[in-house]
Every structure is written in C-alpha cells, then in structure tokens.
Length: 121
Image (cartoon, rainbow, N blue to C red):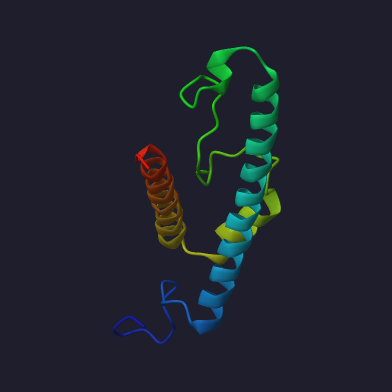
C-alpha cells in the first residue's frame, strides 16, 4: 500500500498461488514448444537425408533448424493457447526472464554437445 492510501497497489508482489500458476503456465508453454521443435527437427532431418542438396544437410545451410527453440519465434498457430496462458499468468518481467533463461540453457547444452562431438577419442 502507498503511504496515505487504504487500498493495495496493483503492483503488489505475486503470492504463492499466483507464482505456482505462472510456473505451471511456463512449463506448459515451454513443453509445447519443445515438443513442436523436436517434431520439426525430425521432419527436417528426414527430409534432408533424402535430399541430395548438401546445403540442406549442413547445420549452417539456409534451411537448417537450430538446436534450440526461442520463445516468441514460433508461428502464431503453434502453442497459441499455452502462450496466451503463459503471458496472462506471469508478469512481463518474469516472461522476459524465463524466455532468456530457457534460451541460454539450451545454447549451453548445444555447445556442450558440440564440444563432446568434436573431441578426439
């Protein structure tokens, strides 16, 4: 509450219940994105293995799919219910934080996988 007022501020910190709702919505959204991303990677790898064009098989080619997903870069038809629930259940600062954190975690894993593949036996 502000000094001299009798009503609570709109920016009161979230309570335990609202935090749990936010985390559940976040996990649902990221789970949906991960599942969609995994399916796209399988589709992309099966189509590129049957193709004779070397640029599609390269990880640096124009049609190469990243090893990680970035929240917000998916088509609007993908995970739309989960995305709207996530954005309505969490504060914007939390959404920004969680989105950056998941991308950084995935980049770290992709880097570690790349390093382990490049090591000599």
